[in-house]
Image (cartoon, rainbow, N blue to C red; front, side):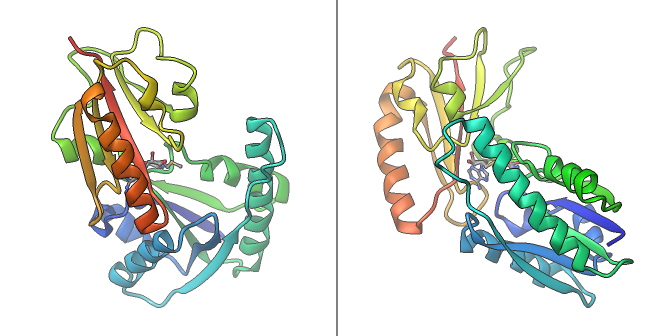
Length: 249
Ligand SMILES: C[S@@+](CC[C@H](N)C(=O)[O-])C[C@H]1O[C@@H](n2cnc3c(N)ncnc32)[C@H](O)[C@@H]1O
């Protein structure tokens, strides 16, 4: 493989992909799609739909499983690093099987630069496996943008910074000095134990047909969010949610 496009596809709405992404797909010989393991079937379907809808040339589709994380490793960072090594090995084998002059594409959820390790893993593949392919990143709409657009709100307050963090980090306490905090990857519902006066803008499946939106003073809506989250998760078998917390003036 001589070149790999890493294409941000947005957050589940096939219309999120940019013209630049579509153009890259139409220069691609082989599209690599994760279909098993951690990746939910629904998310693989969205990637397939994007290929069906926008690629107007012959291409090969290579499906690959993502190895699960070893939950027995106690240290979180080590667990993630080990997992990345496993993925890097399977990428190296998969890329080595592609023709030497082929152009490949990976379709990354949202934008490849935000809470996604594809680019870190690819750097390791090139370094450790000695594969010398060019990488071209095509930006995509992030869940953060889809969230603020869904509510029709700006991300920041006037002249102030924004913190983007994870549920795991938020559970350790409110980021010092922050007034707008976006929380991703929060399977533990960290919002449940925060300051009651915060304003929350919560979205699940944002941009998708299943989209759910709830906003209000945290004390007033947190139970509703948790109930909605639990029932949506059991209905669909998976959930992706994100929220913005804003300090009351
Ligand atoms: C591994 S991160 C990937 C982020 C992605 N690279 C981006 O640019 O948005 C996954 C997290 O993104 C958020 N997310 C992604 N898609 C979403 C969606 N359609 N609705 C709500 N949250 C979403 C959730 O917080 C989820 O836990």
